[in-house]
Every structure is written in C-alpha cells, then in structure tokens.
Amino acid sequence: MADKNEVLRLLELAHQARRDLCKLCGMYSGNIHMGGDMSMIDVLTCLFHRTMQVGPDLVQVPERDRFILSKGHGAACMYIIMAQKGFFDYQEICDTYGNVGSKFGQHPCKTRLPMLDVSTGSLGHGLPLSVGMAASSRQKGRRNRVFCMMGDGETCEGSVWEAAMSGHALKLGNLVAIVDRNKQLMTSFSEDSIRMEPYADKWRAFGWNVIEIEDGNNMAQIVEAFDRLPGSNTEIPTVVIANTVKGKNVSFMEQQIKWHAGSLNEADLATALKDIDEAFEKQKEGL
Image (cartoon, rainbow, N blue to C red):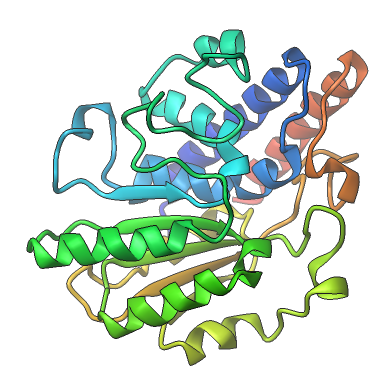
C-alpha cells in the first residue's frame, strides 16, 4: 500500500503540472498535443519525482537512470515536469516554446537540451534505442534502469516488436517500457481501426514481465505499480501498461478525438483550470 502522504505529494505535483500545461497552451499561438499529455501526466510525475534516479545534479553521472520519451509529441508535458524537478525554468518554456531556435520544440531535441538522452518524434524508435542503452549499461556492469514511454498507437509499429524480441533475447531486466494506453489514435479510437486486444498478452508472448495499471490516472495505483518493478539485475524486461484517459480531468477534452492537439482560448482556459481544480479536490477526498 502506497504511503498516503507520498501519494498526496505526487498528486499535488501532477495537479500543478496540469495547470501549467493548460496555461502554456493558452499562451502559445499554435497547437499543443493536450490529449496525450493529459493522459500520461500522472505516470510521468511518478517517474520523475519518485521512481527514476534522475535530476539536474545527476546529468553527468553514468549510473543514473535513462528516460526516453518515445511519444515525442508529448514533449510539453515532459518539459513542465522536468522544470518541476529543477532542470530548467517553467517561465522560459512559456516565453520560448515552439519558437525558432528555442530549446523547447514541439518534439524534444538533445542538441538543444543536452540533459535529454535522445531526440525523439518518429514513432517506434524509442524502444529500439532503449534496448541499445540497456544492453550497454548491462555490458558495463551498471545497475541503472532505462525507461521508455510510448503511446499505445505507436506500438502498431513493427520496430517496437522487433525491439521487444531483442530485449527479451538479451535478458534486459534493466529495461522498463511504459505504454500510455489511452486507446486513441490521432484520428480514431484504436480498437475501431487497429485491433490491439488482448494487449497485455501480446507482451507476455514476447517474454516480457507485464504490470498493468487498471487506472493509469490514479496516483496510488501508479505508485504501487512502479514500486513492484523487479530489480535491474534481473533477466526479464518489464512493460507497465497504464490504462489512461486522453484529455484526463478536462471535461471538453476527455476522449475527444479533436483534442489530440489543440489550443485554448481565454474561455476554454478558464473552464480547463476549473475542471482540473475540481478533479484534484475529488482525488484528495478519495485518498
């Protein structure tokens, strides 16, 4: 059972990240991938603020954990959570996001942000890169983990399953894949166009340890799931499947295809912030 105070701490961080993300979306003149950002924000909060050994003081430490955001269109969410962790300043994100020459592009770029482990954006590349990093760490005798966050839509890519086979064959127990299973693609619901179920069984068939989170937006369940990760010295890679809701906690975004990406006008922003605050109060009552 996760400690209530720790769950509350993480819940507060996720709540603030949601507010900051909406404010950024209200300032920016273009579209931000709000739907998938909102679905994965709780998992990302737990990863950066509890599970992973990462921080601005550890960037040059070889033994630190590695993180790859394979669903690179979720960069805005990652930037905000990394700002909470102290990697950079939130206001700088707001002032420069998406501008020519900005460190904060719509997809993460390692040449602009050297603390990132890899540039991402082309879907299906993250897990293969993670396999290589995990194999390298294993070869060098390091005990760190490599975490890879994917969207469920990108797991339609064959490169993901080639990497899954390799991760199993190389006995990479230090490799953790996370799937943001919000069951929506850019233009449709996944099960209406690309049948993925039985989803967890596919990963088991490839020899992976599977941890499923029934509600991937429930912080207590998220903490409990990541606390169950096997040691990095084991020989079986793990996938954490987080069943989430796209656009979570904003009434007009939840499970709406058109909110794969969008922008917020003043009225939308006010509604979104109100929804997020109300959801936060209910979540606290449920602890």
